[in-house]
Image 1 (tube, rainbow, N blue to C red):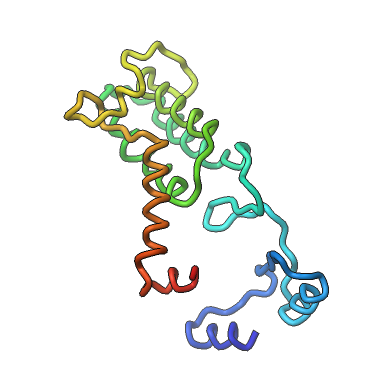
Image 2 (image 1 turned 180 degrees about the vertical axis):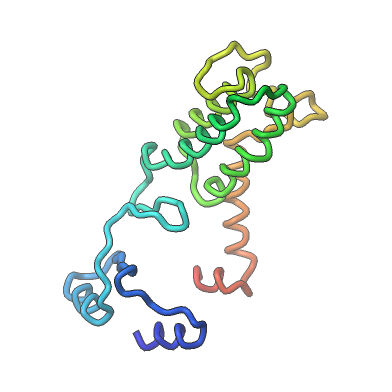
Length: 186
């Protein structure tokens, strides 16, 4: 606690005991009780949200990805009334929807069921202008996800993008030894 108070004095950030929780892992109950008594922190329970991302002690369920799916669905619903061209809807998917996805994709491996739902929402929006209306697609989604110079629309393949972003994070952990965050991870 002295170190936390020293950090607070140095940074100007103060600990809020009422807003702080302790999430133990691999600590015996006697030590855990001692830590709780010293800190005054309540013991939290998994899953919880940190910076908008669910954190769990085990693999996240598809239901725990609902904030991501809801956010994408809400964006599409907001645009549903506008009469947008295919090009306009493509740009919204590429810039806004895939931007929303990017934060989650860089942190968590996204399950197949969640990827399928995201693709379904984007595909429906591209072809019908709405999230809920299924219209027969004019082009297969795998072809839509090709780069423009290969005849696609340049929409990112969610599975490949997820893998690339997680690999980038792992690369950062391995390569950027001078970063405070990476030093903390090590």
